[in-house]
Image 1: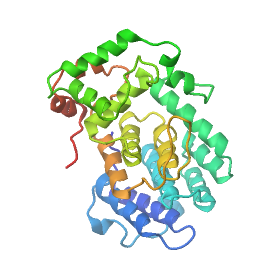
Image 2 (image 1 turned 45 degrees about the vertical axis):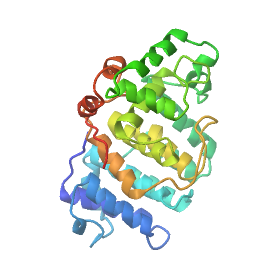
Image 3 (image 1 turned 90 degrees about the vertical axis):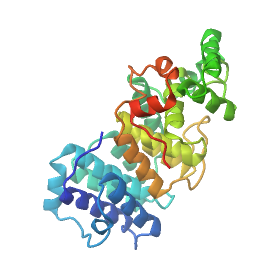
Length: 314
């Protein structure tokens, strides 16, 4: 869902982003690229409405953002992203974002995570992100951050019938979504849900469907963009369950668990905000309970892309 903003709200959000970037000195080129990308892809403004003439926000301008909860949440989310652009845990920038979120009356889980990170409590922040991710995917509350048994259930209880159903996708016409999904698994040497070592159907199918439909590979860059698109398509725990975990994992090199892995430097400002905007423009959510993967699998892949609202980027 795209969040409509006035020019004043957009400019105020961009000013907030610049303020976080400048918390400890001059903004970097990557900081400026972030502001330019948000200007273009999210706010859909011409370049001259971006960096030029941005000024610190007065209490009045902050209050106008706070009056619209969706716009305020987006502003705080973009500020949070700016805190990580440099690829490190910067306590000054993280603290600035928490203070800003308080001024905007944004009390989402991700603000708690940022406060924990600013205090150096990486363990608690990661645990909360894992729980948020599980709650976002499953739609139910989780009391534990041990996702291993849920994420890989077929190690203890294989499901051969489910695996056979996936193998049948390989026999579909090559223009179908199901065939493309099977090719994605073959190309990446993945095992299908139901087999030992495979990931839970409840996560693997929607997540990998986004990969296939959006055209993102499984590199650190591709994983970061896939989760960013998912965040704005699915909306549930967008920052705490999707965006922050992959920024930590694939940009800062901080693994959340043994399965996910980690890498440095996968964040690309232009591609990140393009993925954010693509997720906003979707018209169907492949993580929603009513998404029918098996029905979609037998449809032409271009028809499924149109149905979801995802075209492959040029």
